[in-house]
Image (cartoon, rainbow, N blue to C red; front, side, top):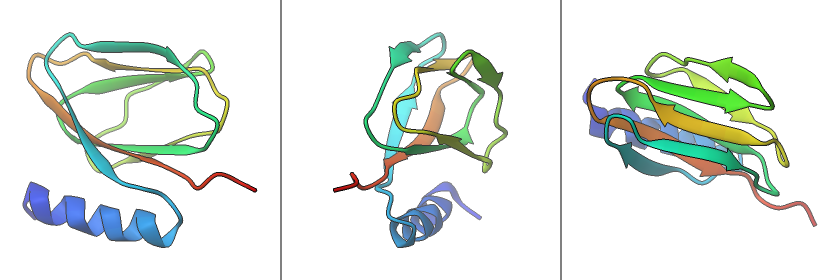
Length: 96
């Protein structure tokens, strides 16, 4: 399955579950450190090699593997590979 088609499939699934879905592209070595969101987040690596750290625990999801980041969790994302990484992220709806 090509990348665009897989992204559309994931987007439909996440939307049904109440999450947005956007593509993020990081060059090798890019690091995003110590973020906190007030809503739950889903991430899925599409291409490349990413490392996610959530509340001090390190994850290395394989392409196509979903990772859940709970609201208010300190988390980081790092491209640890030697090529551009493409990954999806989506935020859950805020509780009222």
